[in-house]
Image 1 (cartoon, rainbow, N blue to C red):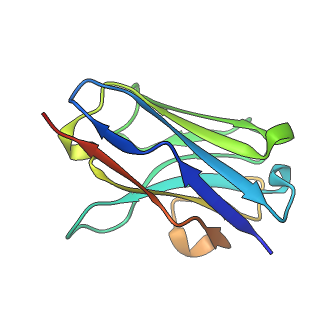
Image 2: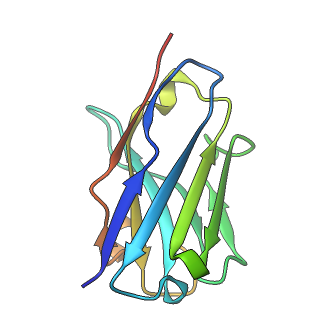
Length: 124
Protein backbone atom coordinates (compact mmCIF):
# COMPACT_ATOMS: atom_id res chain seq x y z
CA UNK A 1 0.00 0.00 0.00
CA UNK A 2 1.38 3.36 -1.00
CA UNK A 3 1.88 5.65 1.95
CA UNK A 4 3.42 9.10 2.18
CA UNK A 5 4.20 10.94 5.39
CA UNK A 6 5.17 14.62 5.47
CA UNK A 7 7.09 16.31 8.25
CA UNK A 8 9.02 19.50 8.88
CA UNK A 9 6.22 22.03 8.99
CA UNK A 10 5.99 24.66 11.67
CA UNK A 11 5.76 28.36 12.42
CA UNK A 12 8.41 30.80 11.22
CA UNK A 13 8.78 34.52 10.79
CA UNK A 14 8.84 36.09 7.33
CA UNK A 15 12.22 35.53 5.73
CA UNK A 16 12.72 32.29 7.60
CA UNK A 17 13.31 28.78 6.28
CA UNK A 18 11.84 25.33 6.66
CA UNK A 19 12.65 21.98 5.11
CA UNK A 20 9.77 19.63 4.48
CA UNK A 21 10.32 15.90 4.09
CA UNK A 22 8.10 13.35 2.39
CA UNK A 23 8.88 9.74 3.25
CA UNK A 24 7.34 6.99 1.16
CA UNK A 25 6.63 3.44 2.22
CA UNK A 26 5.10 0.46 0.49
CA UNK A 27 6.60 1.25 -2.90
CA UNK A 28 9.95 2.15 -4.46
CA UNK A 29 10.00 5.91 -4.76
CA UNK A 30 12.11 5.89 -7.91
CA UNK A 31 9.07 4.73 -9.92
CA UNK A 32 7.16 7.90 -9.12
CA UNK A 33 7.24 11.59 -9.80
CA UNK A 34 6.61 13.43 -6.55
CA UNK A 35 4.73 16.68 -6.27
CA UNK A 36 4.31 19.14 -3.46
CA UNK A 37 0.97 20.92 -3.24
CA UNK A 38 -0.41 23.40 -0.75
CA UNK A 39 -3.82 24.62 0.28
CA UNK A 40 -4.55 27.72 2.28
CA UNK A 41 -7.90 28.29 4.01
CA UNK A 42 -10.51 29.41 1.50
CA UNK A 43 -8.21 28.87 -1.46
CA UNK A 44 -7.84 26.21 -4.10
CA UNK A 45 -5.07 23.62 -3.91
CA UNK A 46 -1.95 24.85 -5.66
CA UNK A 47 0.90 22.89 -7.19
CA UNK A 48 4.10 24.17 -5.60
CA UNK A 49 6.85 22.01 -7.05
CA UNK A 50 7.43 18.61 -8.57
CA UNK A 51 10.35 16.36 -9.34
CA UNK A 52 10.44 13.55 -11.87
CA UNK A 53 11.15 9.98 -10.82
CA UNK A 54 14.85 10.25 -11.63
CA UNK A 55 15.19 13.84 -10.47
CA UNK A 56 16.11 15.00 -13.95
CA UNK A 57 13.06 17.19 -14.47
CA UNK A 58 11.85 19.76 -11.96
CA UNK A 59 8.94 22.16 -11.90
CA UNK A 60 8.35 25.20 -9.69
CA UNK A 61 5.32 27.41 -9.52
CA UNK A 62 6.12 31.03 -10.34
CA UNK A 63 5.31 31.98 -6.76
CA UNK A 64 8.10 29.74 -5.42
CA UNK A 65 10.85 30.00 -8.03
CA UNK A 66 14.15 31.12 -6.56
CA UNK A 67 12.98 30.46 -3.00
CA UNK A 68 12.04 26.77 -2.90
CA UNK A 69 14.24 23.83 -3.86
CA UNK A 70 12.96 20.31 -4.36
CA UNK A 71 15.25 17.29 -4.19
CA UNK A 72 14.99 13.56 -3.73
CA UNK A 73 17.01 10.74 -2.25
CA UNK A 74 15.60 7.57 -3.75
CA UNK A 75 17.84 5.42 -1.58
CA UNK A 76 16.06 6.88 1.45
CA UNK A 77 12.66 6.93 -0.26
CA UNK A 78 12.46 10.60 0.62
CA UNK A 79 11.72 13.84 -1.17
CA UNK A 80 12.58 17.21 0.33
CA UNK A 81 11.27 20.72 -0.15
CA UNK A 82 13.67 23.39 1.10
CA UNK A 83 11.76 26.62 1.57
CA UNK A 84 13.71 29.84 2.03
CA UNK A 85 12.70 33.50 2.23
CA UNK A 86 9.26 32.46 3.40
CA UNK A 87 6.40 34.93 3.07
CA UNK A 88 3.06 35.14 4.88
CA UNK A 89 1.37 34.08 1.64
CA UNK A 90 3.22 30.75 1.86
CA UNK A 91 1.07 29.85 4.86
CA UNK A 92 -0.84 26.68 4.03
CA UNK A 93 -1.05 22.95 4.60
CA UNK A 94 1.58 21.32 2.42
CA UNK A 95 1.01 17.89 0.91
CA UNK A 96 3.25 15.57 -1.04
CA UNK A 97 1.81 13.23 -3.62
CA UNK A 98 3.08 10.39 -5.81
CA UNK A 99 2.41 10.10 -9.53
CA UNK A 100 3.20 6.73 -11.15
CA UNK A 101 4.93 8.31 -14.13
CA UNK A 102 8.37 9.64 -14.95
CA UNK A 103 7.25 13.22 -15.52
CA UNK A 104 5.52 15.66 -13.21
CA UNK A 105 2.04 17.05 -13.47
CA UNK A 106 0.35 20.02 -11.82
CA UNK A 107 -2.98 18.21 -11.93
CA UNK A 108 -3.67 16.74 -8.52
CA UNK A 109 -6.04 14.18 -10.01
CA UNK A 110 -3.10 12.44 -11.70
CA UNK A 111 -1.49 11.53 -8.38
CA UNK A 112 -2.13 8.11 -6.89
CA UNK A 113 -1.24 8.70 -3.25
CA UNK A 114 -1.23 11.66 -0.89
CA UNK A 115 0.23 12.34 2.50
CA UNK A 116 -1.75 13.73 5.42
CA UNK A 117 -0.24 17.20 5.13
CA UNK A 118 1.94 19.38 7.32
CA UNK A 119 1.07 22.91 8.41
CA UNK A 120 3.36 25.80 7.49
CA UNK A 121 2.64 29.15 9.10
CA UNK A 122 4.60 32.28 8.24
CA UNK A 123 3.81 35.17 10.54
CA UNK A 124 5.50 37.91 12.48
